[in-house]
Image (cartoon, rainbow, N blue to C red):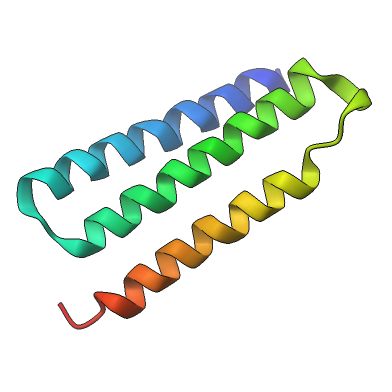
Length: 87
């Protein structure tokens, strides 16, 4: 059951990134770009979670790479808010 939730989280964040990216291409709004980039990284983080917990098992620990990707995703979104905050 937990595996299905992890996969659904990956699919949801990937769809959010896709829709934000499509909206950015149509409108050119900078905040949409940074949000799409952040959600892409969050989707990658969810993919790493699925690989870590369901594929490789306890032999390999991907917690540190997942936390780094998470930090970068939040930093990208924060940078986008600061850079495009006045729009």
